[in-house]
Image 1 (cartoon, rainbow, N blue to C red):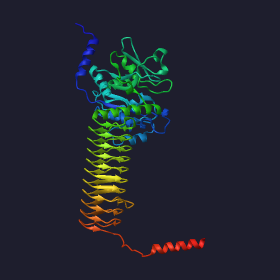
Image 2: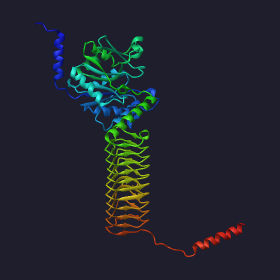
Image 3: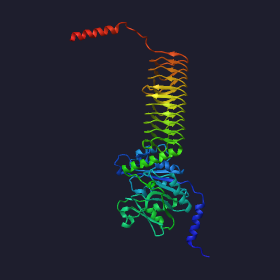
Image 4: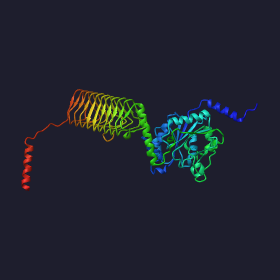
Length: 488
């Protein structure tokens, strides 16, 4: 009995699809100039929601746990590489820029040679893509053992986007660029989003067959669709549920519009977590900000970076918090700047306080108006209520820092630490010249400059003795009156 080649190929494809598949590899294209942004900053480094466009794509890709990520850079690569420092990515340089196909070709040597690992190709200027959509693309390619599954979308205006051309049965035949499209093809509403999931062997075959465009000599990755589609059934275009996920940012107007979409998404995440956002219209929340139930955010607040607002805390108006944790029941603001800090339970910060990186406030700490901290730990119940600078310092539990106190931590070459013991009292307008230790329960008299350690329970005073000059003010006034009469 003869079995058709088509049936055999389908059986083989199903068998391969049933086999376990390695984690996907990701190639992110970030080499574009972005001339329409009218900026000296590389396009992928413009920001939305507190992150660069490139960072949003990398964060999204990381959600699917890829085996590796390769980033292709080109224009402004020195600046782009700075943003990539600290990330587990491989950087590949495309120079000169010869199109998306050439960019992927340059990335191939950096990928694993394991043919079972699919290759995702993403664009670095598409910040609204979600992990769910990427997972859907990967799953569809695996389930049907496709050579290629790519994302399509239907934007309100297709403009210069490549159109997805299908045959009468709905099978993808090719992607046609607008400048090469016929009048009928330009009417096609389905556009290419620029996200691809390739079987690794198919990608290598398609890249090897790319030819330069006659007009500009560039290699287009979109040509790979037509190459692979010639093998009927091996290519599928999967339409995005939300067209905005395929939206590439090319202009400042588009950047601003994407910012509003991202802002709304972040607000919805906050609502879903049980947070109260008093005035959503004036609140800015970054994509990595997390909330616990009953956190309250008042108007005109900006939350960025890896920030966590724990249960029942409150952030008051005109405050910015970045890469920080606000503990349960704590209150921050108004008019505060908090970066890289940990604020403990039931602590209160502000108004007009600045907590710089390395600040740790334990529970029920008070940091008041015009107080600045850096690399400082304030233990439970400590208070610094007014006009102080605490840098490279440890303040013991229940210690009190008076108004105008300064830890003099820098000698012009190195930083030094100050240690203040539990229950110590530092009088107003004092300077603690580090390295120095004030013992537990010790007192420092107001207006003192402390250069030596103060033992536990001691009083340190460095003021000069007070001198009263009897009658000095009266004599001064008399002299001034005499001068005025003489002048008159």
